[in-house]
Amino acid sequence: MLIGALAASTAVPMQAAAVPAVPMPVAPVPTTTCEVFPADNVWHMDVSALPKHPKSKVWKRASHAGSTDLHPDFGPPPYGIPYDVVDAAHPDVSIDFSYAGESDPGPYPFGPDIEVEGGSDRHALMVDADTCMLYELYDARWNGGEPRAGSGAIFELASNGLRPAGWTGADAAGLPIFPGLVRWDEVQAGVIDHAIRFTVACTSRRYVWPARHQAGVADHRCPPMGARFRLKAGFDTSRFGPNARVVLLAMQRYGLIVADNGSDWYFQGTVDDGWTNGLLDQLKQVPAKAFVAVDARGCRVASDSAAFDYGADCPAPG
Image (cartoon, rainbow, N blue to C red; front, side, top):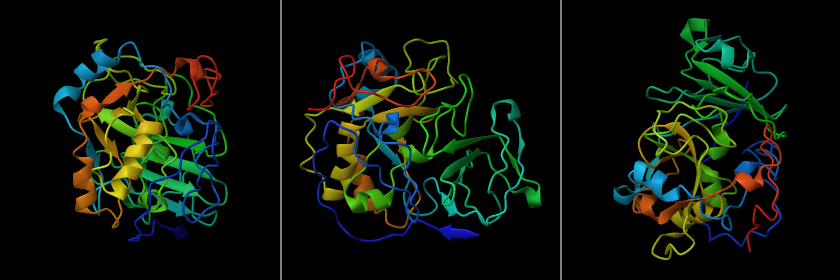
């Protein structure tokens, strides 16, 4: 049974308050009590004090940062990635996967009532409000009751566990999609407490933490899956409206993570009636050259964990 969906509102938030050095409580998925991963999860890591990555300039050049502006790859229907909140009463089904060897077998709470992203990727994201499990599918098709998908991944939202090394997910980096989406309810609340997923056209044939999979080319100049970029602290956000500043502040604090191959500097969000052309147009005015790649290698607690820890090699925000 479908029990929740993202609600639209016209409230205009003020700019968020400063973030302390310790991880803050994580906002839950709307209509649930499920936090989107623990507070010490890499998606919630403040990278504003991290050092510049030695390959920042090379990666930016390969992704055409000098001549490209950000592009919000979402908006009102049908633009963006939808998600559905379900409960334990929703029927679970087995999925016939094209890449079964790197997919979690399920079953999945998928059905004809679940929204599927338009376009070729056809992502379907489902959060079970009773179990706080996240289910994600790539190339999802109901297929008249014989469901199929390219790949599928299941994440426990209370856990810092990563997928097995080398495994894809519903995106090419093997990362969860949902925690990296810009959501309208977050903008309304005035706080985005996580990194944002984005794409570049050229990725190298390797991946870095927290990514688990690569789908790139033999060109070391291209950024790897999992590379993280932040908006420079000195970027002037004063000319932007309050809603746009919420997004830009998140980019300064938590940054962007390379999560898939696609158009250069396209960042993803949920489909929602609340998005306005005015806000989206403002976000298109941010030049990619205003970003810098950060070195997060010293923040990793363990190779198979998404947990981070501030320390000498992972400077906490001031």
